[in-house]
Length: 154
Image 1 (tube, rainbow, N blue to C red):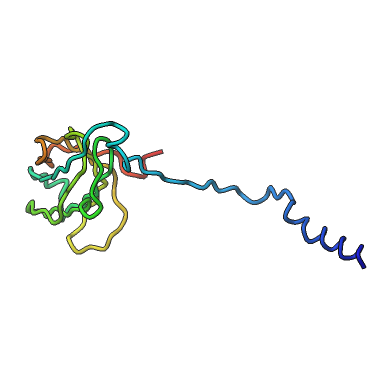
Image 2 (image 1 turned 120 degrees about the vertical axis):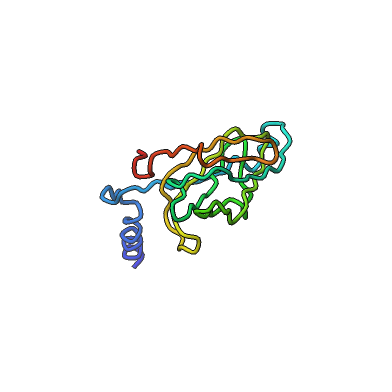
C-alpha cells in the first residue's frame, strides 16, 4: 500500500517539474515611476507650474484637441490636471498643473482630435511644444511639432 501511495505521489508531482517548451514565455513588465522622489534624487526644490495655451493652429485643433501631458524630467503632471481639451475657437477645458524641479523649456503631450464630449479612445502620437515663462508657462500651439503617429514607432 505504501508503494502505491509513493508511486501515485511521484506521478502526480511529475507534471509540475516537466519542461514544457511549447508554451510561449510572456515577459512581465513592471513600471516604476522615477518621479516619486525627484527632489531627493536631484537635491532641487519642487515647485508648482501652470500651463496656458496660446496661438491657434486650425490644422492641429480641427474639431477639438485632446491633450494628455506626458511626464518627463524636469516635470511630472499632477494627477487631476494632465488632460485638457482645446476647442476650435481656442477655449481650454481643464488645467495643466505640473510639479517641476525647474522651469521646463518644452513639454510633450499625447494628442488626438475629438469633440469635447467624445468617448475616450487611443491618442494619435506625440506633440512637442516649446514653453516660455516661469511659473506661469505659455504653450503656443502654433509652435508645437507633431511627432510620428504611434503606429510608426518601433
